[in-house]
Structures are given as structure tokens and as C-alpha cells.
Amino acid sequence: MSATRIMRRTLPFQGLWLGTSGLRAGWRLLIFLAVLISCLLGFREVVVHIPTLTRMVQPLREGRLVVSAALVAEFQFVLSLLIAVSVMSRIERRSLADYGLPARDAFGPYFWQGVAWGLLAVTCVMMLIFSGGAFSFGNLALHGRSLVGYPVGWAIVFLMVGYFEEFLFRGYLQFTLTTAIGFWPSAILLSIVFGFVHLGSRGENWMGGATAGLFGLFLCFALRRTGNLWFAVGLHAVLSTARLSSTRFRTAGFPLTDTCSTLRFRVHDG
Image 1: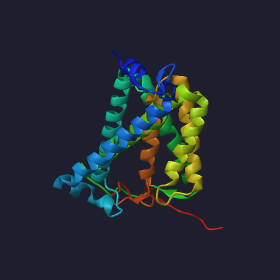
Image 2 (image 1 turned 90 degrees about the vertical axis):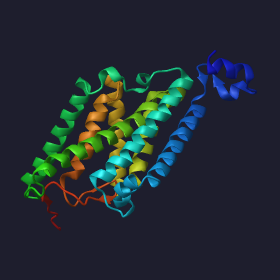
Image 3 (image 1 turned 180 degrees about the vertical axis):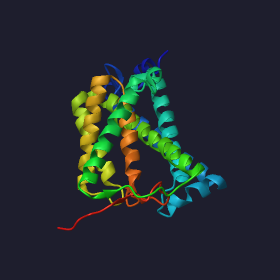
């Protein structure tokens, strides 16, 4: 017997809990967030009690961002999200594909189209800045094995960033809110939240938050057109990785302490 049928038979005030499609969207969101936050807090305790992991994330506590610390942090986010969505899929009797990330399309054409769009956008912006004399490539700051490990490590980090943020905002949250208020009202609301979340990063301003919100709305449009989130994951990962292009850039409010090149931007006063 399904959980929904059991609840219909046993719960008082059924109209408060259940709608025509089962458990109401508001309660599903609350359960999802409770599981997600519990997992994040639980994994944080695990990291604290494992000396090796504690040493790896120590730079984050000191306000520095290095690839090893970012890998551990993002892995916790992705694993917590997967657990929370898996719990909800069992409750709602749905598959993970219903929330926008079908496994059969993983790293398929849509993903690589997103990567291509991201690379094209970044290249155009960098060439425009270069043509104005405000950017120089500099020299490589890493050599040998580090030159390979550095970009691979950050590519994995930002693939996880794209996966987490897309599956959270345009995945489960978008799907669940859509069942309550429709696709585009949900998209607009979650894009505003997405912008405010990024506005909370250290060193971010209102322009950055607004840009993130508009970017989120564009990704909702991509979801509507493609039917899944793999395009958005690829695009998001590339654009996030592009923030590593300058030694003066900050990622999520943290200054980078290991960089691939001595690339520089010049800001002209007046």
C-alpha cells in the first residue's frame, strides 16, 4: 500500500496534508529541506571527526579556497542533495528523472551543447576585454603534473557546483513548486531566490545577484525547451570555471590561493 493511501486513511484534517496529487507541495518542500539540511549537518560532523578531511577543508575555515578543500565541500553538497531527492522520490513514487536529470542523458548531447555555449560566451567576453587593452594572458604559473591536476580538479569541482545548483533550484524545487503554482511563476520565484543566495556570497553586490537571478531564469527557459537539466549543468559548470581566469577573482567570496597563470585584468580609472 502506498504512503499516500496510508495517510489518507490515518491522518486527521486530510485536506490540510493531501491534495489531488497526494502530499501537498508545501509539505513536500519542508520534508525535502529538512532531509537536505540534516544530511549537510551530518556530513559536517563526519568531516570534523576525520583528521584527513579536516586538514583538507582547513583552508576554507581560514578564508582561502584551494582545490582539495573545494572538492570535499562540494562532494558533501552533492551527496546530501542526492540523498534528499532519493528520499522524496520514494515518498512520491517518482524517479530521479522526473526531477530533470535522467541518467540516460548524462553527459549526452545537451550537456556538451551547454559546455559549448559556455566556452563560446567566455571566449567572446575575454576577446572583447583583450581588444580593449584591459587584459593580458601572462605566463603559466604551474608546470608538469600540477598543470594537468589543477584544471582537472577545478573542472570536477565546478561540475559538482553546476550539478548541485541545477538539481536543487531547477530540479526538485522547480518540479515541486510547478505542481502547486505552475512552471513560470515557480521559475520567477526560484530565480529571485537564486539571485539572493548568490548575493549572500562575500564580496558580491546587487549587480552580481541580479545577474545570477537572470541567469537562473534563462536556465529555466533552457529546461523548458530541452526537457531536462543537462544543458544547464554543462553551461553552469563552464561559466563557474571561468571565474578562475584571474588571480584577482574570488569564487563564492573566497580568494583563490592557487592559480594556473599570471593572467591579469587592468581597470582604467575615469
